[in-house]
Amino acid sequence: MKNSGRRVRSQGFLLGIFFAFLFLPALTSGWAQSLDENSCVTCHSDLWEGMKTSIHSQNGILCQDCHGGDPTKLDFELAKAPSTGFIGKPTKKQIVERCGECHGDVERMNFYGIRADQLVRYKTSVHGKKLLLAGDEKVAACTDCHGSHHVVSVSDTNSPVYPLNLPNTCNQCHGDKKLMDQYHLPSDVFQTYRASVHGRALFEKKDLSVANCASCHGSHGAVPPGVRHIGETCGKCHINEKKYFLESVHAPVMKEGKFSECISCHGNHGVKP
Image (cartoon, rainbow, N blue to C red):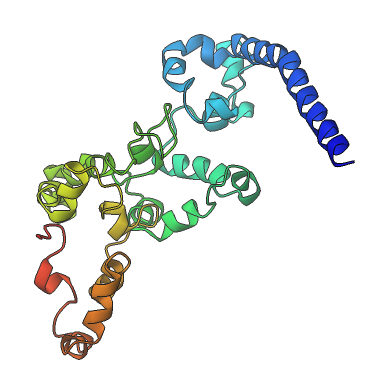
């Protein structure tokens, strides 16, 4: 009976493969045909070249899902008529809202094993508050970190937010002196970090587990850790050091607010061995 059950399962598996190969050409040709009839792709073939290998297009997310419009109409006026919801090039606020429509949908994101709280967390961040509450379009939104048309998985080594690439991505804004001066922030953090024990471990040893910008500040909910939270932030990695510190004579003094745990001795971005 056991062998018979195994035979049935095996036959079912092989039958499934047979049907998959039988219908795959039809599915592929149908997808290609729909692209041939897509007015967005027809007119914006240069942008499609960058988008067709993105994680979105590979999962059926196409131009109209972000920009609106009717891709079945080849006539320019009809394709971009007001009734189609066409928004053209979205503002940063519209980008956040559009991305959040999918990435805030628990049912949709569960299928891909992706967290669905990015928009909620972004709204709590310094970037989100300045954009959504103050209308400051100079701050980072989704596309500034992940890209726009050619978005790849965060685990892809070409992703702007892959651990080895993340500091350079943050530095595009945080290394811009003119921009940072407007917020009274330093613009040399990347150079300081690069020379630190964390930066050298990341860039020279390719140690992806070492602290980068998002490890301490967060990613979607990016907020600089306050004085009272720095110990918890460092303690996520330095578990034993955190334990020893809380048993030391310095702990009560720290609780009185007379110095900041960890960075009073080690610094923050420029931590040395």
